[in-house]
Image (cartoon, rainbow, N blue to C red; front, side):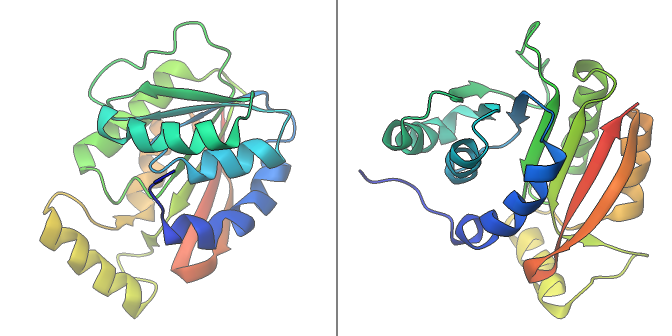
Amino acid sequence: MNKPFSQACENNKQPILAILTNVFSKNTHVLEIGSGTGQHATYFGQLLPHLTWQTSDLPVNHPGIHSWLSEAALTNVLKPIVIDLNETWPIGNTAIDAIYTANTLHIISWALVVKFFEGIADNLKPGANVCIYGPFNYQGKFTSESNANFDLWLKERDKNSGIRDIEAILALASSAGLNLIDDHTMPANNRLLVFKKQ
């Protein structure tokens, strides 16, 4: 089966799992925003079988996600739904009690980053956990030369993308009712932010 493949997902899945195992230990239904290739969903779904893992992305990425899910054949990992951050999240009364997203906030526009947190405010109940993985700037500075180069590459392909300032992210998170619980250092100059909804 010709599946899409992300080397970054392959490299970071084990360090992320080590944290999710603890953070999501009492959760039951995770919504992944921006499932990309589907690699994280199948890996985490297999090793965290107590979770129902709902994949989501724009329609263009659904065939790739379906290919990973079909091969893994996991009953707890659900077929992708369409989540466009400009629109209301189509989750109805689903008992979502956790959000996971990886390598998304620097890809989408800042306007959509704002919409992402508005979606959390509108859809998550108190006590829910939110995990956000990716690179961030601190005090307006890149944490590495490689991140600075990555930011240039991002802006060349899309002027609205780029590595976000952690202070701005935390302000949006606070406005969405999220408290920062942990800020984990991860491989390749990335971070894993862990929040809890008030």
